[in-house]
Length: 188
Image 1 (cartoon, helix red, strand yellow):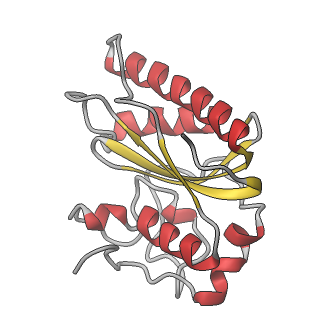
Image 2: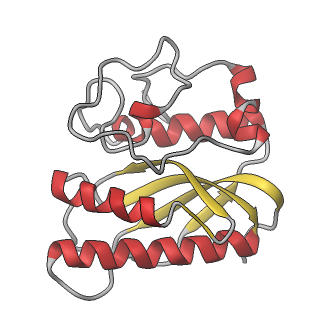
Image 3: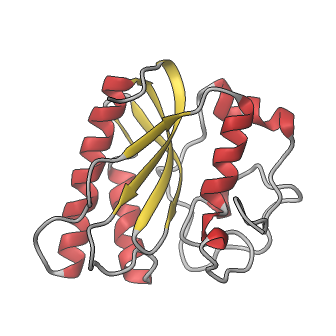
């Protein structure tokens, strides 16, 4: 059973790919994924705010007005991602391994920890990157301590990218301090 919530709440969502599929971090695949995210970024009462694409899974931070909006929005986004990636990979069949995992973020500390986890997740997986992860919303995130190191040259800022609306995701977490770029979440 999904965790109940009310109001515009930030939610940390994890989507996993089915076994044996190519990495989401390949340039051509990531461009297709970005288009799919843009097409489904604000539908059915759910709004995509941050993301990271890793080899075989994605982490998203979304805002949803209720459990139903989250379910509908994630269903639509999942279908859009699956169809786009299947076209890119010239295949058919299952793309997502199973249903998404969602955790409602209820406090400024939870939101700050989730932002650090999502935006710095490549480092957790020991993927070598300089500056903000180019396969995430990190290059356009305005909550880095000291700003972003370097400019993003390979992909422009998505026109569909919007800021958070909920107090927790837009302002509340900042009370605990901005994020340090280059830290590795959940480990040494």
